Length: 287
Image 1: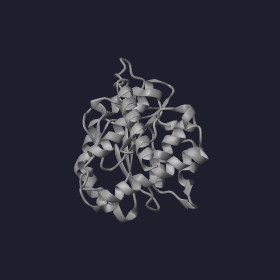
Image 2: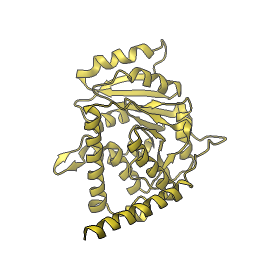
Image 3: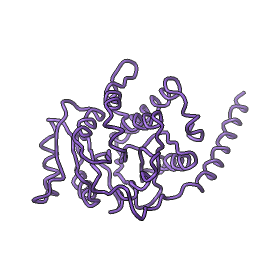
Image 4: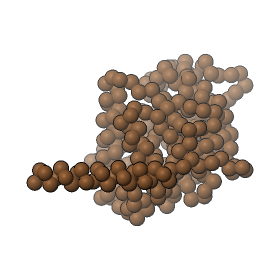
């Protein structure tokens, strides 16, 4: 019995590797349009943050260098002074693109909604507080997929530790194959403003529960499911100009982050299978 089980796992792994290599050939960067429908100056960047890292100031500089319409930072009262201190070095007189506000309580989803309600851009970029944009063309390249009116959201290349990178490449390849995506990686997500400003979305993301408890994290997997259930395509911009980087710390904080990611992935998987089935019809390779 054990030999048969191991043989089955080996066969599946071999098939999966072959499928991944085949799909990898289809994963091509989406080129910049000659006459883009969306400009960087129409993008509102929203950052929900607590326990804000020291690297936040450098991240801000990179975001500003991409010329967004505005950057809305949402924290809590406890961390407000720290956020102001980290923002101060990049403030230029006369530049009012950065605003800092607070939410009533710490919750990634609720803080994100606070920022969404204040945003004025046609496109929103939901960005983690440790997301390093590697080039000055991150926004133009992330906006390129939205030239397709069927695309509701987009993410870029993610640079992380090797084990996670392999998984993300697999996601990219399978997204290229059928337009599906198991999870839009939350470090930087581009989405059309009308989608997340919909009162139905705002209510759903802040009242989403698991085993009777309101979820505070997992905003990226929720947004992914919402887009798919609403009939939108999701694009992965597999271009080096759209690469998103982050600092990975080799300590217990990273371990806790891995646990949170795994928990959100399991919750989303079970929700998709049992409560919101149909992903197989939308994106058979992801399913």
